[in-house]
Length: 112
Image 1 (tube, rainbow, N blue to C red):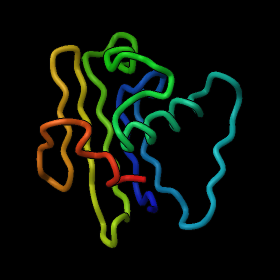
Image 2: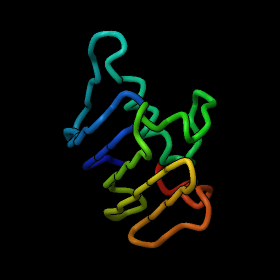
Image 3: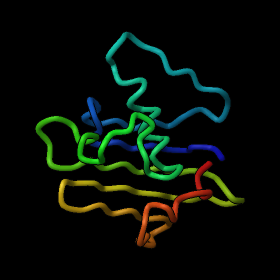
Image 4: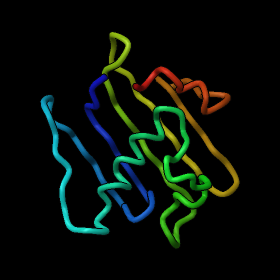
């Protein structure tokens, strides 16, 4: 599995981010409290949509905002794929390759 593009809006302390990783090894570094772990957590959500911090989904929304949105383009299972998540206090939408998912568990095994 290779990430080709990641877009994040209103996730924890990340207001807006577009990341296009290099094909090789990528290193994430920076000062404390700049969002490194939040970035990893956002990517981790696509493996099964559970925070490794044990947070509720609404705790992931940036303070003062109404939702968070993440979109991931990746190469996995032999093809290019796209996954999106939009979470608000009232709704959760997960879309894989333009198909709405009925449950977040449907992502298990797709993005490893």
